[in-house]
Amino acid sequence: MKINVDDIKEEIGAFKELSFKEEIEDIEFQGRDIKVVKPAKMDFQVFTTDESFLVTGSINLELNVACSRCLERFNLPLTIQIEEEVDKEEVELIDNQTIIDITKEIDDNIMLAIPMQPVCDEDCSGLCPNCGQNLNEADCDCFMHTVDPRLAKLEKLLDKE
Ligand SMILES: [Zn+2]
Ligand SMILES: [Zn+2]
Image (cartoon, rainbow, N blue to C red; front, side, top):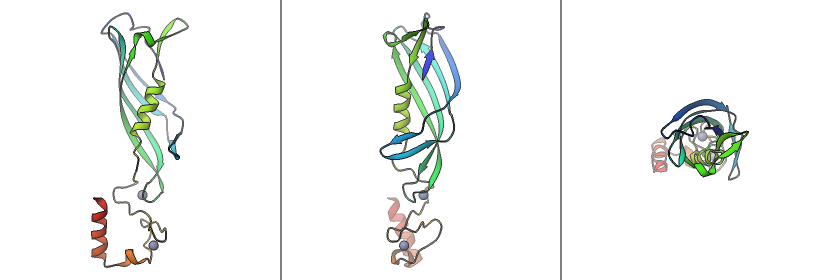
């Protein structure tokens, strides 16, 4: 993502606010297929300091990921806070305009915000480890899920720790 800072570069303490939507490509991350459902909403402030440009703000996006328990795909909204500093020596001049490029920093921040084990619901029952039945949809006949319901409850509690 590139930000034109030509209008604020001369004055220390000057800042501008930006609000826009940007298409983000689907993400291949550790073998997981992560879809970006709709354009990300970016809200940034850019400040000029004596030696740098400081970018703060947030990215709102919605991902479509597989639940780590039941493997069903679901939409996961994420808000990512951004705080990046770009040295004035790193700016590019494009068509005589001073441009800062934080594409990589934004990509890195999005990667870091993706949960390792997303769950479709905190109470997701997952798949039966024995037969693979999605236990959110129906129970199966395997032993460990037909035991006394009080035991099953206990099992679930233990599972959470
Ligand atoms: Zn699930
Ligand atoms: Zn089963």
